[in-house]
Length: 282
Image 1 (cartoon, one colour):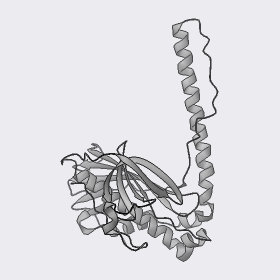
Image 2 (cartoon, rainbow, N blue to C red; image 1 turned 135 degrees about the vertical axis):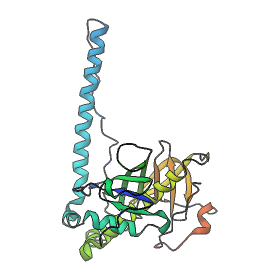
Image 3 (spheres, rainbow, N blue to C red; image 1 turned 30 degrees about the vertical axis):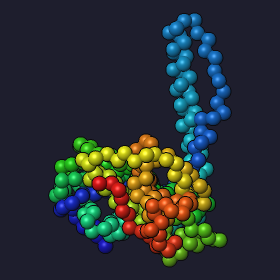
């Protein structure tokens, strides 16, 4: 199904030739560790500064190389899925994602600036990663809003992470790739739609009173692994929570556990029910 041209609402900018990026979830906690200390023999202060700067460049380069190796190793989790990923069409996935947005989101497709007919354009730069236990997908989407269309002026940037609920399978490859990769495509589209919905609500709340709710430790799941983040809770809906981290990133994540009496208890659904995102964003 061709994507609808953008004549009103939010225009999603698309450059011809753009491709989907899938990766393995990588753990960079060890990147940069193990480097030895360095003494700075220098005849004077100028020489000392030069030595420190040179060392900084060398360490930075070493860290970058280490991160590349860690990512390459993490990407091996995708080996059973390369064929399925290669068959996912860029426009096919975006068309499906847009169709899953609520009608009031008003997101449409724009091939180039000549298609723009609204006040706000959206530019999306996303990466979809698979957890190492192959139970979940993680979307990282950097979304730029530009008023008046075009790519020249940036008015707002939202960084959004969305994590799908874990599906533990004896043969995860079969789960993700059966029926021509139906589950891989569907879950990817859900994550994209959720990230756009979260970012648009954040953008539309810019002129409202800032959220002054306290930061607290949120425990959530990334695949079967338990993670934690210091964050403000923006929305709490039983099996997942929308939070804003200390660095301002928005995260829609499955809760690791719920304490009886939490505010989200009243909204609990069956485990397989996907709740509609509501938010305390004004």
